[in-house]
Length: 90
Image 1 (cartoon, one colour):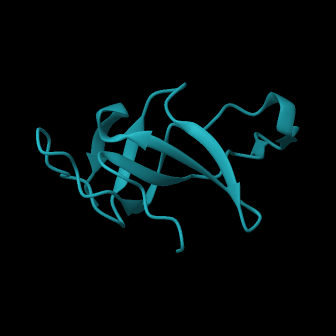
Image 2 (cartoon, one colour):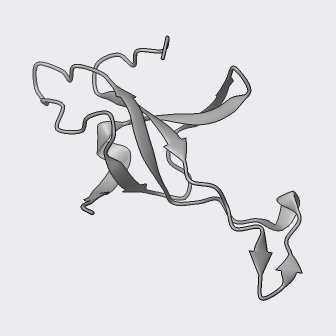
C-alpha cells in the first residue's frame, strides 16, 4: 500500500454491500453503505492521542464517517481514529 495516513487517521477498506437479499438482486443505488471494514493502514497518532488501531483490525464506524477515495480501482475510506466505534474481535 502506497498510502500512509498521517497523525490519527486510518485507511479503511469497507466490507462489500450485500447484493442479493432473499433472491432479489439489489441495484447499487439502493444498497446501504456497509458500516464495517478492515483497516489497511494507520497513522502514528498524535502527541495527545496514541494510535490504538493497526492494519488488519476489523472495525465498526458511523454511517457518515470518513472521506471516500479511490486508489487503483479500489474504494477506501480515510477517517480519524475517533470516528471508529469498535474493533471486532474474531
